[in-house]
Image (cartoon, rainbow, N blue to C red; front, side, top):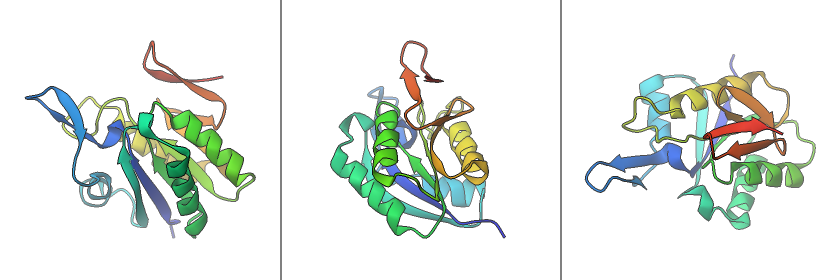
Length: 168
């Protein structure tokens, strides 16, 4: 039997919707990811979701990171995905590593540079799928899954010049 995967939703570009009239992205009233994973993709039979926030990661605070940490500690699941904006994803991974210490859970943060909704060429679906695979195969620890790579917390940066995550 497949293990349960707990998904913590925090917002970020992956959750935004594009308005062609204003040419702006904005958050929808609710997360699209539960419907996407459960109804559209039917990717995995044992998922649970915890909504922490729906914000741009530039607005991420340690108080919200504490809520993510609380959700990780409360779930019985050993496999956890955190959807997160890319601007401060590394900071949250380091925060979690610092406050969790050695863990028996596999925690993978992921997000997107382009919103999932309405964009066929978005990296969102790929990154989310890569995170789903990584959380099931990686050893216990805290990671970031972006651009078909899995990085350890604290050993990755977002290279804004090329729009890609890189190991350090």
